[in-house]
Length: 87
Image (cartoon, rainbow, N blue to C red):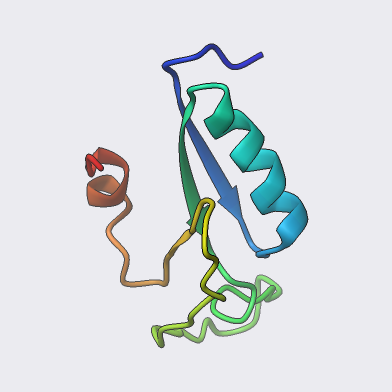
């Protein structure tokens, strides 16, 4: 249960209408939703012995007339500032 007035952080590696709808339900319940989207293309799975390739390019997600939009992150994103950022 998420109480009204709470801040809810969602970290996902995919962006879909199903995720968006669930987060919008929380918003309708007066929850401040912060959706952080870490795309699989930027954060691919690698085995421990593989070298890391740092992807920093920007991706976009479809624009929606209404509803919540994710904040897209990459390896250069400063999570401390992202989590501290007021809307």
